[in-house]
Amino acid sequence: MVSRSGPTGRLEVDFLLRRGEEFCTLEVKAARRVHPGDFSGLRAIGELPGVGRRVLVHCGERSARSEDGIDAWPVETFLEALESDRLWP
Image (cartoon, rainbow, N blue to C red):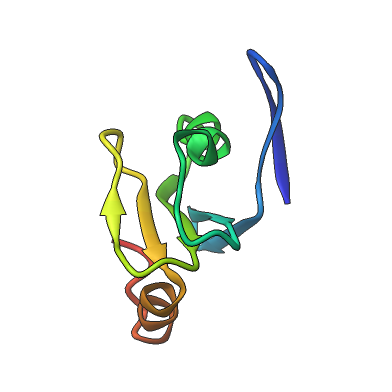
């Protein structure tokens, strides 16, 4: 887990994967629906050097992308991307 202080307190992401000098950050939620607040840790870490893709993994069925480029993927989509080496854009 990676944490950072934000305007409303501590923010965190669950996983930080590294490949060379680039990072993929992951926030994992057990919920079937995602809410705007679920993206706050990924937003806070997005400006750090080397952060490429930011992904919120959830138990729902639909993929989506936020206005600021954060992917929200069902678990199955994440596992497919991981298996086929598509986590890094």
